[in-house]
Image (cartoon, rainbow, N blue to C red; front, side, top):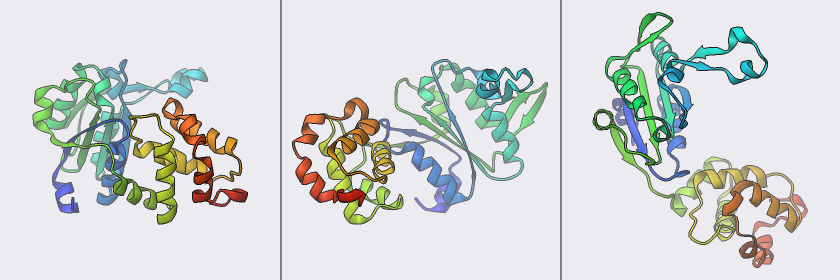
Amino acid sequence: MNGKFLRSIHAVILEGPAGCGKTFLSEKVAGELGLQYLYYQAHAWSTAEDLVEGLDVPSIVLQQGENVRKMGKLVEAALLSQQGGVLLCLDEWDKGSPKLDALLLDFLQSGRIFYGGRELRANLSLLYCYVITNKERELADPLKSRCYHLEMGAPKEADIQVYLEMLGCSRAMGKNLQMVVRNSCVAGYVPSYRDFKKVWDLIQCQVETLDEVVEILRLSLGRKFHLSSFTSQWGNIKSELKLKGGKR
């Protein structure tokens, strides 16, 4: 996708399995177009009010009553769009209530949002919205009709290699790292971009022993980590990764 095409599409629905790179793509688009990046993660308990006027959790914990309420992401996006380009990423939108779809549709069509007793208007020419879904529920048809659709699949080895190199991993190390992660997962599980990034971030620390590497993979892959399949090949893996004396 070139910059001209990306700039022409203001509302996008990204669909695909968890960890396939949807959020990462939205971040890269924002960077490519020079847009300010806003992020919101939806939950089962998310309401329309949260998107207009949310809660500041640290203030609640500290019992700072005057700071408990904060500006919701739709309001923040509207205000920022009046100053320059902004990309609003609404992650895991399908976890939220279907009622949220109507609010978002109206916002994308009119740029209108009510906050603090007054009506705000977003500059729709400078507002971009990426709605990310794992298909836990169907989005409302009017919202789907308003957005460009892009469906992403599980990442291929070549895609992961490019991604790891973007993170600063060498080509040879990237291939070895893929081998380790894929061979350490339970049967049938396809590791995601997120899995590889977690392992890469952790494995850059100094590691020498099998126990240390196992702990890294446990932290990164959780229940998807298959200990016996990893330990059975530890000799080859250690040789490939050259994890002697903490050197990569």
